[in-house]
Length: 116
Ligand code: FES
Image 1 (spheres, rainbow, N blue to C red):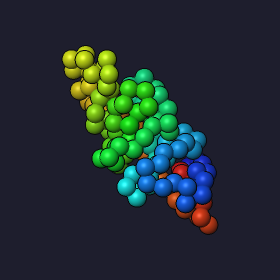
Image 2 (cartoon, rainbow, N blue to C red):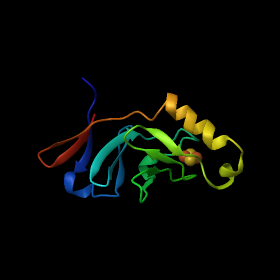
Image 3 (cartoon, rainbow, N blue to C red):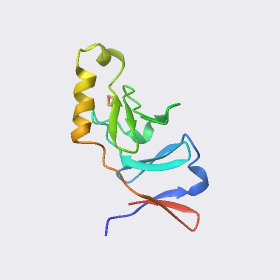
Image 4 (tube, protein in one colour):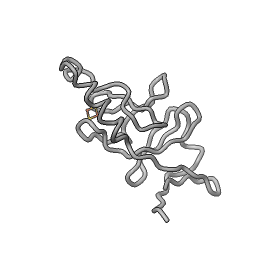
């Protein structure tokens, strides 16, 4: 059985919210709860400090790469100075096709959320 981590009261994880629980970034993307491993595949930023953008993607707090929370794949490469490096975004998108973020399962019990 996999280890379970407490996220907190279910009512606090409103749409657009991201938080951390153990090794996971847990959030609410358009009403859908998700959990992905919290280290960005680019330079390791904590994705629990990220944001949900208007397209429901999880955006890294350091260089704004964006992840599809359903697949764990990076769908937009690092921005800023990194976006000027030819092919860099494609490389990282390719890496996460092979090595996506891990995904956890969010469950609710007695009004409290857990991830495992
Ligand atoms: S560490 Fe996440 S985009 Fe750079």
